[in-house]
Amino acid sequence: MLRIATWNVNSVKARLPNVMDWLNSACPDVVLLQEIKCQDENFPTMEFEAAGWHVAVHGQKSYNGVAILSRHPLDNVMRRLPGDDADEQARYIQADILGLRVASLYLPNGNPTPGDKFEYKLAWMRRLIAHAKTLLAADIPFVLGGDYNICPTDADVYDPAGWSDDALCRPESRALFRELCHLGLTEAFHALHPEPGRHFTFWDYQAGAWPRDNGLRIDHFLLSPAAADRLLACDIDKGPRGQEKASDHTPIFITLN
DNA sequence: ATGCCCGGAACGTCCGGA
Image 1 (cartoon, rainbow, N blue to C red):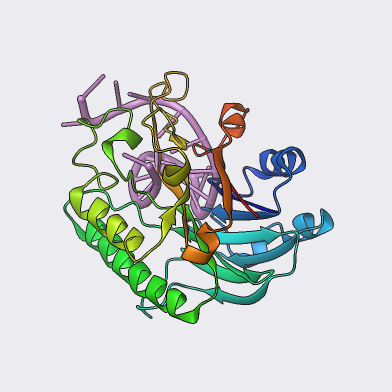
Image 2 (cartoon, rainbow, N blue to C red):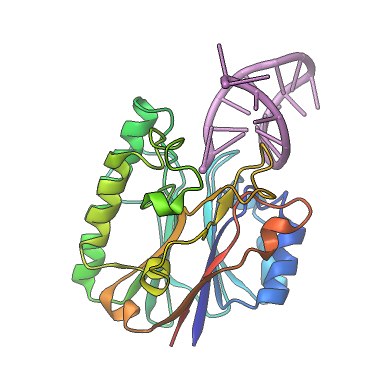
């Protein structure tokens, strides 16, 4: 059994006590982090290693940044999403863990639409689709987890009409997400919880979004066919969102046999 | 409501977030 979580922590330095408490209580085997908001040398690598974690980081000053924590050794660490050497934003890191290829990704937000940021989001998604094709051809089971900044359907939005023009919900964003899935990948939460419900992974800090349960489902796991064959469970852990000094995202887990 | 909150960088307040 392998339990993998993904969590946009909204600054690993501001969130370190929350993250450490959660690691001790939730006991994941692998954790994919996004929005660490620090350079590699400022990531709390020593603290995590002292707690028994293997660490791989792809950081950036102030913005973005992704990392992988693992109870098992990390091999073949790859930083940056292929396809644009001029892209300096730290949004992708990949490693092999016990023969499983695992990626932590932070897909661009893309607002406002239309505009340069939305075009960057769509271009980044096309690069992710191209990379997923490469991963499928490598014939190694893989898991792409992270903050996709996509609500796949209106069922994933507390107020679909109000969000219809947002980059997270735009038809162009959803079409590229479907194109990615249609390569043969399984979106774990939807596969195991197909019924509509208020299944969210993000609640804005503003306007009482958390107490009102006005959330979005934007953090996802996409699994290759061989990884999907091992999928036993996928669940959202709402606990951390209710803590003091919480991230605006909460972790989501998959369990593989 | 073009508002609300948060972290980072910086020390003004703005940027980015979603």
